[in-house]
Length: 107
Image (cartoon, rainbow, N blue to C red; front, side, top):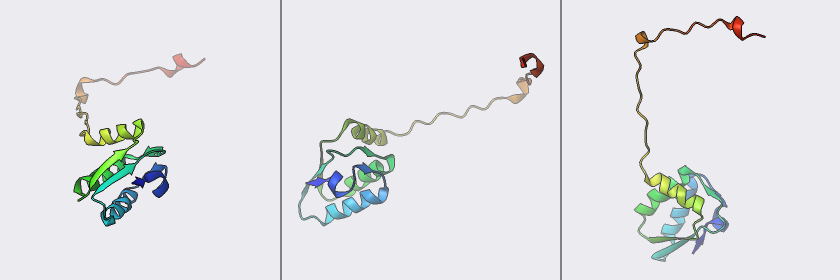
């Protein structure tokens, strides 16, 4: 079992940290790996994304244990494709500048 808080940090932030973790996992002789997230306070989007990429590419069977709700939500967020809003172009010729007399707003 890999206790991530003790092995890495309670706050997992960098892609490099996920890479180092999975380098260690791949060196392990065990076929089944348990990642213990107990007492891990936070993960960044970068760490979660790199963790997911490396987990998919791993030759090991990896199971997460004691994943806090906020961390579970981050892993769910990176699985969903980003929703991008559409850029709306306005025809500026239809709009006239607003004329404001600032003297009316002074005391």
